[in-house]
Image 1 (cartoon, helix red, strand yellow):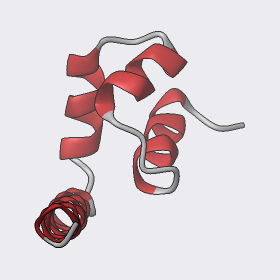
Image 2 (cartoon, helix red, strand yellow):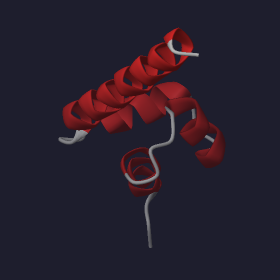
Image 3 (cartoon, one colour):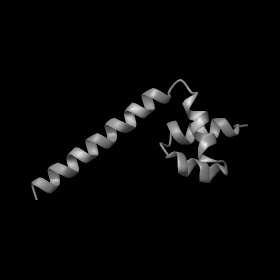
Image 4 (cartoon, rainbow, N blue to C red):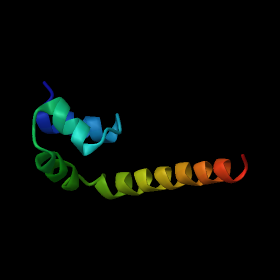
Length: 68
């Protein structure tokens, strides 16, 4: 059986949901979700992945706006 912590980690690392979305789905506070994910060894890597993904998307949006 999957524990609540496992479910939170799965939603964050596998489904790439945001903290607020996970808190709503699991009926816990955002602070608790943040605590659970920050103690996981994969947190820094995932944080960097999401940051790079957002930067990439912003670059494409700027490119599109400038060239339209």
